[in-house]
Amino acid sequence: MWSETVKVDGPYHFEQVLDRISMDPVVALNQEERYIQVPLVIEDEPYVVKVQALGTVEEPVFNISGTDGETKIQAIEKIRRIFQWDFSLHALTDHFKQTNISQIFEQHAGTPLVLEFDLYSCLMKCIIHQQLNLAFAHTLSERFVKTFGHQVDDVWFYPKPEQVAVLEYEQLTELQFSRRKAEYVIDTSRLIMEGKLNLEKLDELSDEDVIKELVKIRGIGPWTAQNVLLSGLGRPNLFPKADIGIQKAIQKHFKLEKKPTSEEMDQFSEAWSPYLSYATLYLWRSIE
Image (tube, rainbow, N blue to C red; front, side, top):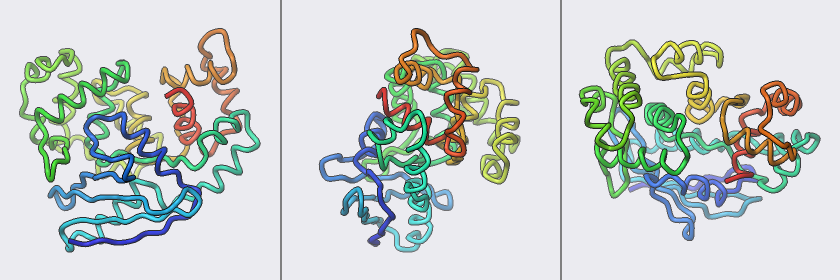
């Protein structure tokens, strides 16, 4: 058993983090006790790491704990990246004070961009969530994980690519996946197993090259590729204009009679760069 106390530059609103993550029924957390149990894969082995908030929004302090001391350094590194502890939100706050969504940033001040726990599970989740309402998307993700994944210390892990690659399409359609979505999930996993899609190398590519690489794959369009960049790789300047939630948030905030056009979204977002990903997150939070 090991534990480590980590101080982070404030503001950092961990309660907002837990509130947003709590929408995912697969994740193990306790909002009252301010902790989350994170499923990590280190050197192809599953480990559960507990992250508990001890401090305040302005002076955030966390306790990180796990069971295998040999994985401590790697686990802490992964946790710092997932929760974006090395990115100061001060610059973000100052930047958006001068923009047309300053009110939203004041309301949700200190909310960080938190990554999915694993790039493969992020890709699977993005494919599953395509063109579905959020509630049913989470239901399908939960069925997928609890049918084909596994638990460690009561924490669920997504199945590995090699486990999904050998499934039959009917095993997913039985869970209410559409036939096409079942094909996308399984076929993409097979490409990973065949070495035709190397997820580890994506982090070395530019945003544009990641999108080019992913959209070659049947079932992955710009929306999915952009969300992998945002939620999987933590790129700071992504703005998925095709996302219905973003469109609704902009329509609500700017009191538009109908959903904004692509050109209108470009005009509204002109001053948000180079933090478009954070604008995306805060717009989502404004309607959740």
